[in-house]
Amino acid sequence: MAFKKLSSLNIKMILPLHGPVYRNDIAYILDKYQKWSTYEPEKKGVIIIYGSMYGDNENAAEILASSLSEDGVMDIRVYDASMVDPSFLVSESFRVSNIVLIAPTYNMTIYPAIDVYLDDMLRMGLKNRTFSLIQNGSWCPASLGLMKKKLSLTPSFKFTATEVTVSSSVNEKTREDLKKVAKEIVQSL
Image (spheres, rainbow, N blue to C red):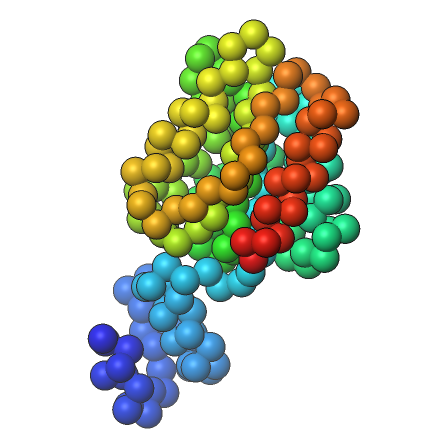
């Protein structure tokens, strides 16, 4: 509603409560504010956020990213949650339409770096995204169910149908499941 009121004004400058003063590209900035305020993704794209203790989830993330690329997705970014600040991951979540989470089960919980990202993202009130969930665990994988439980608190989130469990390392079945997830992501774009 506020943006409708603003549309009739000749805006020459935007002075946010924090950050830079905008004197140029006002239409571009207003478009960003409109998307952020309605939780509309800025782009039809995919971020893959993984946590990996031994490199196997990193491998799964790279396989999935390759499959998405082969299927024609242009905007794909892969992030190691242990190496990237959660605030950056949250801002990337506002940018794209699809988010893939790959997490090992860690002491019957979600891998800590992924869990911190989830909590921060949920506190920011993100909406209207499609998630794909992949877990890793050899004797009692639990992270997928725990991630889905947290994400299900936001009714506007959607999920791809295929849920993948990596049993320690990627095998042929896992590779096929990852390709299936890639196809579902492409369909949701």
